[in-house]
Length: 369
Image (cartoon, rainbow, N blue to C red; front, side):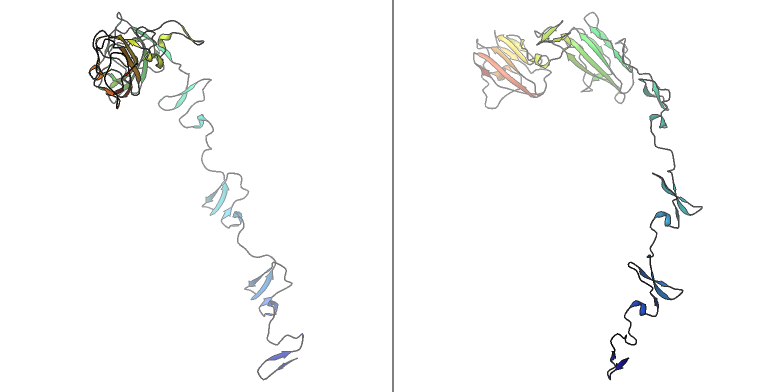
């Protein structure tokens, strides 16, 4: 029972629901809530026109296979989805195409089926196939008509006054290199063909007489230039500055055989007894230290040959007779006195230390006891 006052306010008895007032979803006319459980949701049913509670929420697809255009089946490792236009679905399948290469013979340009131990692969113009290993072999050396040959080492050739040689031709195989060790007596003449040029300077001619000792002559044909580029490396180990040592030598317990083929930088510091008067041009490629003994008259030392940047050494002599008074007059123009040093050479035992700064600049000073 309820009482309405003059203002329209409705008063209800305790426990009664006011007429026309709803206090829960189930009191609404378009809901059908039956025993709601934790986590349920309200879903609208268009057929009944009612909202009702449901135990499981309605969601979209949770896996690929729940999509209407996917038929993944039971996929395996590394499979991919491939579209089938006929069924208009994506299917799980193995990758298309050949399996990844697992060996040389799987490559399209390799046929190594017949390979045996120690074979190498060699190209035949179409494929790489097994060939026996070709070890370098020695070849006869004909200096009159040298031809590049793969996998060959040319025999040592001894150059003496009785066996001068002529280089007149090379095989025109671009990039091919041959190495010829030539033992020179220091006087025999070599004649080079017109196509032979120095490796560092393509316009430079080559020496006609190789230095005394073992010379390694490296020749490479350059098809672009149409030249044979030559580099000569001389190996020598001298005891007195004039003749190569032969036989065996023991250096602190370590035996060195065939000493004339050993190239030791420190040997270049061994002094060379030069002239005691007149004019002299030192060869810095032969040695670094020069001893001229007791001067008997004025001595002039010209600009050296074959100097190397960074090379250093000493020129020393006894000027007790007072023949030289000024190193500027004694030394070639390439010798430059060190800053604030005197150029005067007194009548004493003289040492002139030097260092090559550049091919045309050799710094020096005058020292004496």
